[in-house]
Structure formats: C-alpha cells, structure tokens
Length: 422
Ligand SMILES: O=C(O)C1=C[C@@H](OP(=O)(O)O)[C@@H](O)[C@H](O)C1
Ligand SMILES: C=C(OP(=O)(O)O)C(=O)O
Image: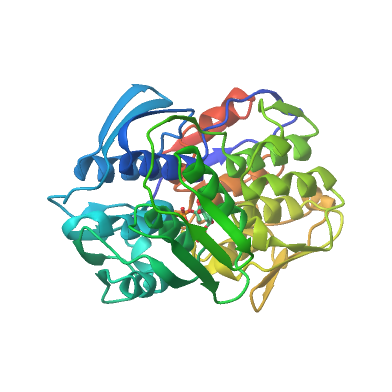
C-alpha cells in the first residue's frame, strides 16, 4: 500500500517567526487520568489535542468520566472518584502513556476491562507492569507480554510494599504511582532492573499527582512512597511540550534563524528540555551523548548530528528499540537513505558521522524516508530536508500522534511543504 509523502523544499533563508507549541503529551495524559479519578470537576488548560490524548479521553469517557471540551486547549473533567466498567475494549492506538497508565488504573474497575492498541502497540512490552499488578492482587494478563491486556478488576488492590521494573519503560512506574494514591494504605514502590532512563518522567508524575492533592515522596533513587487518599479535583495548567520544542530549536540552529516558541527550556519540567543545551552547541555537538535521560529527543539530535562538524555517538538509548518503532534502526536507515555511511550502529549505540559538507556532497538524489508510522522519525527527518534537496518523508500524517500542526507550523515559518496523496 503506498502512503502519502511530504516533499520539503530546502530553505534559502534562516527560519524566523513565532510558534505556539502544543501542550505536553506526558503532562496532558497524566492530568486527564488523575482528574478522571478525582471526585468533582477539574479544569485543564493548555492541553495537547492529538491522537494520544484523544485515545486517553475516549477511554476515560467510556469508563464514566465526564469530559467537556471548552475550547481547543481547555477541558473540564468530572470524575466520580473511581472508574466504571467500559462496554467495549479500550482502544489506545500506539499511545504508550495511555496504554500503560490505564492498564494500571483499570484495577479500580469492578469488572473486566480489555486494554488494546494498534499493531505497533501490540509489539510494545507490558509484562513487567502486569507482574507488579499481579503482586498487588490484580488479575491482569496478556497472552504475548504485549497488549491486548485483560484486567479482571474487583475495584480494589493491595497497597503495601511492591516492586516495579523500569528497565524497559518508566511508564510502568508512573502507572503504578498514579494508581497507588487510590489505595487503602501507603504504597512503597521499589524500582528494580537497575537505573531507569528518563527518571524525570517520574518527577512529572509526582508533580501532577501533588497538584491534585496526593502525597508522593522519593526517599532514594530507587524508592517511592505514595500515601492513600485519592485525588482532589483542581484547575491545572499543562506546560508546552519539550519534545515538540526540540524540532523548533534544531530548525532555528540549522538555518541560523530565530524562532520564538514563547517558553524557555529552563521553564519546562520535561526531560527533553535538557536537549536544548546540546542543540545550542551545534555544530560542535559533543562526541558522545548519553541519551538515557532525553530519549524522545534522540531522533532530533541524530538528524542534527548529520550536519555537525564532528561525529557523534549516542549511548544509553537501548529503550529506543521499544518505542513507536525501533528508533535506532529507523534513524540508521533514514540517515543511510540520505548518504551511505552517514550512520552506523554498534550494539545499541548509534554513531552519526556528520559533516557540514553533506549539504554540497554527491548523494542519493531522492532519499525516501520510511517514517515507520512514527511521528518522531517523520518530524526529525523533516529537519534534514531543510538543507538537503530530495529528502521525502513517507506517511507525514503520523505526526498527529503528538503534534498534529507540525507541517502547518513549518509552513508558517516559510517552509514549502508539499504533501501528496498516492
Ligand atoms: O512517561 C512518559 O510520559 C513518557 C516516558 C518515556 O517512555 P518510557 O518510559 O517508555 O521510556 C517517553 O519516551 C514517552 O514519550 C513519554
Ligand atoms: C515514545 C513516545 O511515546 P509513547 O511511549 O507515549 O507512545 C514518544 O512520544 O516519543
């Protein structure tokens, strides 16, 4: 089946302009869920409207949560203090946050819930989260270790001491944290499986929980204590999305432009805000970048590294293999489609052999980039197209997962983006 493609004309001018970023996906899906588990009405402003948040809202509505859309970025969420049985399976597309967070949250349902996703989600592991739920007395199972998951809930679960492995995904831990506040007693979580990537996501989880009245403490790097008591409805503002910001920071740097995104990186609490300093160092990016604490920014940084003065090795990125696609492989293939030898993979490390001269070099005249249905692959390779003729992005519509206006935003900055249907 052939897919739509985006053809981008290389820019001849620095990109200059103002952009309104979408709200943070991570914060929006946490705030929607926590507000949905609270009793009463919360008003959420600045939210992201995209596939991932649509799936979360649809699932919450199916479980009895009232959600009224007041405008494009504002919703009122009315919860009853628990979740009710849905009539149909909860279909969550390829939204990792919605899938992992709801797999735990549906322990509150008195009845059976099926949590399902698309063909990509059905390859993304969830067994470590199911192991923890089972240890909490929740009957949660999957035939494959990936969604679909069946949870036969009784409306309650056991608090106390539990372990969660965050080796494959920190989302399992966030999921348990948000559920734990709905328990009858204190929950003491021990993180197993070694140091987790993107620990900042756990702090975002705690920040949203605290805003809704929960008590969360981190006595050490591997322990979290969550007090019982549920959530209190409140008004909450969602900050702009730091992962989305990385494309604009990189576009600004690559073209020597000035893009005002209305928020400084130090004012964002999401892990990917850390990518700003690396982007700012371009074209002298460091020789080695530990990507473990800014995983979603790696495709952006890797494409930028193709234009860096010196090679860059990305380490600590093994979890990229279980994101929307195998991102190490997808970035490697995309860069190779642009120029043979531009990237190599050693184990789970990605090495980008960048050089500014790339822009003038003989290379493939048409580089067809397979997005692998992954928004971050499509958005980051669009950056290469700002400089290189012939870079063509397959399946550009996949940006709807987290940044539906991405192509419009580029056009607003003067970039010629031509999307053609097959
Ligand atoms: O908790 C979150 O909001 C997220 C955690 C990260 O995933 P993992 O914890 O699976 O690495 C990140 O890649 C994802 O986009 C959002
Ligand atoms: C990994 C991502 O998403 P998720 O895990 O929430 O599907 C992402 O947005 O880059």
